[in-house]
Length: 213
Image (tube, rainbow, N blue to C red):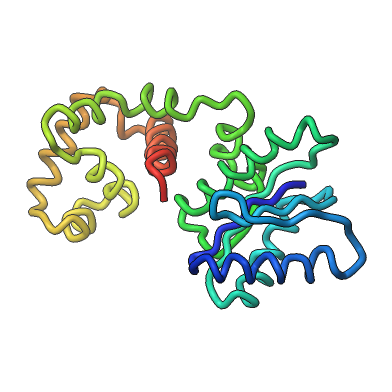
């Protein structure tokens, strides 16, 4: 499997992670692997048939060793050198997803991420899904310098409570109502029905992911 690792510390912390990785995953003699620094991320290639559980265990151990939250995105297993570039990309996407979804300090593989994991797989068109689902709202915000997408995100995050949403956004409840009415006109009258809300909430999460952590 291939592990893509992020530490919230500085470059010295990342080099310390590499040394600790070699002790944990290579120096114990149980595995043969490679560890190094690639574009400010620590990358580990090591034999494993359980990338998700190994990523979680490694995140916990390396985080304790580094003294900072360590997030580990995993991919694989890859069956040969030709599959490593694809595994590298998948592990990097998984790491971004974990951080965007608020799982900093944890680890996992795309298979652990539910719908998002499916969309992060090979041939996934994240931008296309977000555009198909949220396009009218994103276009409205871009054209008018508004932030309806943040209101929509807050509304779902607060359990569709107008009171909690207005508190989170520091606006009057009538402002929230007006924004949601505008969103309804943009997305259609069924935007707040269960089948659509699942799609919209997924698109909101993916939008955060593609915007970066």
